Length: 222
Image (cartoon, rainbow, N blue to C red; front, side, top):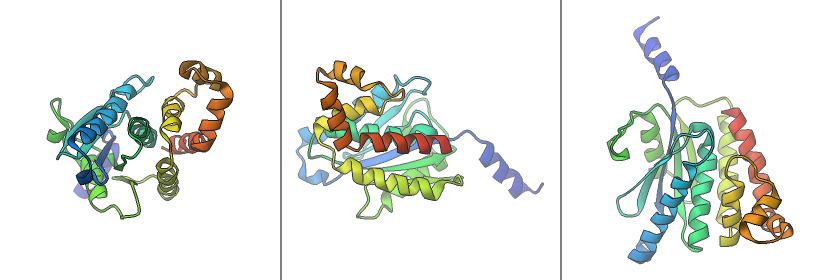
């Protein structure tokens, strides 16, 4: 085996990570207090993900004022984590949105800060945000794309469109529905103090059922 083939095989065999890089849309029009609240909502969402069963702890850091980065619980859960963060932001602030670029690949992690980390996952995530088309708010890229990459990319685009339309109440319920485990509607209703019919109504209006099916399909392909 040649040196280049060995390096390529080593890259494919290296552990993969999912890095989410984002920024707040139209942040220059927001007050410092609102921007800080947006970052707090995103960080709170990342903290909640550390409680997902079987997932590695998520890490979140703010940078460049309106930018942020998150090491997702796992590559398989990258899209779920992205939607969870967007729901966390919408539940807290109705009119504030974030772009997110997902990068999946090997990474060199630092025990101190994400800013000190590096590798393909971080590079792909950062470049994806820089090159994101004006009409898009979500994107995904891989160091070693799976066979289903084109289909997953299309699913990400649909998730982008659906999540832009969430109301704060829908986002609150989707935070429950997007957590791995598929809690029954009666459990969600009890947690939120509303009827099961109201839960179903909000989830349907927010595309919750379709999103859950899409996430199961994507996670099964990764």
